[in-house]
Amino acid sequence: MIADEDSTLESNSAVSLGLIVTELLTNAIKYAFPVAKADARVRISFEQHADDWKLSVADNGVGMGSTATPPNPGGLGTAIVAALIKQLGARLTEQSTATGVTVSIERSTFVSSPRKAA
Image 1 (cartoon, rainbow, N blue to C red):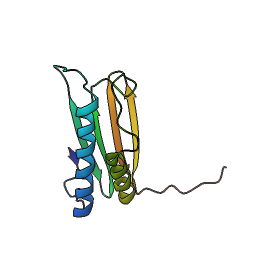
Image 2: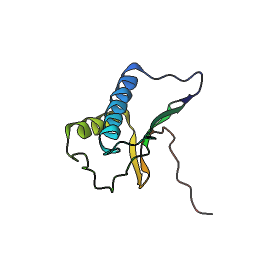
Image 3: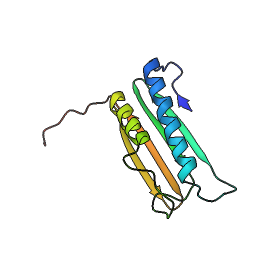
Image 4: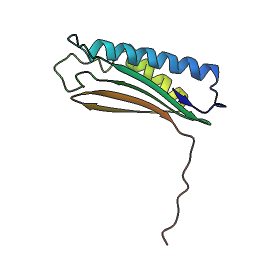
């Protein structure tokens, strides 16, 4: 975990992130390793700077394009995670390769102001 020493989260945000981590970890264990793998790994990381943060859950499993049964795209866990992400004002990104999946949820409070071309 990487965080500024003075960074904090409100308790409701921390609970929401905990529920998200639980669901993503469960999915990684359930789908990333359809067969036993001696070097199976799931890495959870959280970075925070002021009010901006990023949560990532990554595995070294088979990836989403495998023959493993994918999670139900309309399942309860997916709906809960989507609702929590919306509640947190965050966005989700997924990266999948043959060597694993990384799911990241990021909240950024930085707002860019449009500039006129010179």
